[in-house]
Length: 86
Image (tube, rainbow, N blue to C red; front, side, top):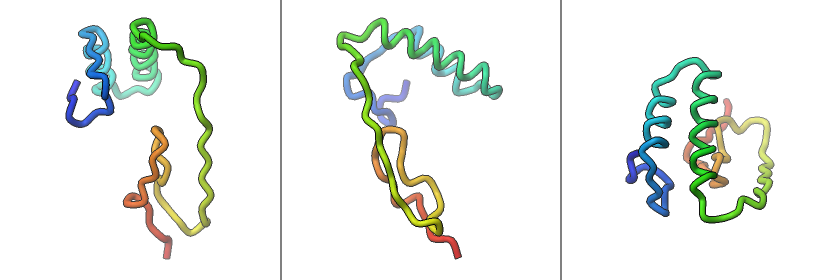
């Protein structure tokens, strides 16, 4: 896994996980890729020293003429990827 371009702040490393993620990145069919990511997630959860108690819901209001992804999966707003429709 490339530590410089990831959000792996704890520097977690697992060779099996790294292999699954690398394979999933190269897999084209969605069903196969999702299954590989699902298996990778199971490895992370099994190794995790914390409890997953929930997640937050994020909402974003915007005008219909704004295009592009504004809210990223990790909850940060990326206005540099949005634009106004003509």
